[in-house]
Image (cartoon, rainbow, N blue to C red; front, side, top):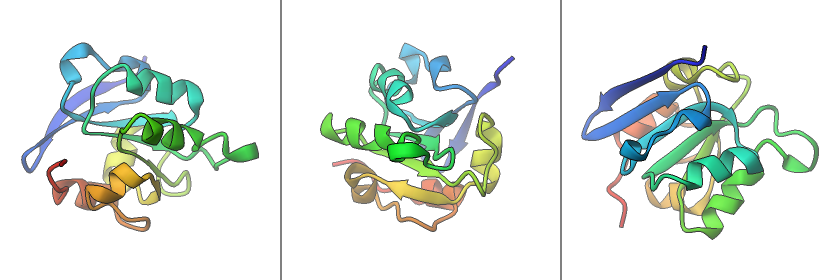
Length: 132
């Protein structure tokens, strides 16, 4: 069964969900770290909850960038999103993304929050800027 937990990272409430489908309406205003790929279907689930940031696994990027295409779709909706590299965190395990994930892609919204490719996720989120 997929795991779900909530932690505090500085001033941020971070929801760790192995599957992005585990988000709940009460997660609005939080950061979601998911073990899910960053594809179209995952982005659709993330878009249902107004998050500060959605983080996915790049799942190796895949054909036609299928594992990260959701970042562009969320950006088009004005939403911040990023992926961690599949080489740094296991797909489907949000806790591993939190502990070991290294950012591999960030959309423009995530970049405005101060996220950069190559940062360790845990450190980057602790120092995240307030959304404008």
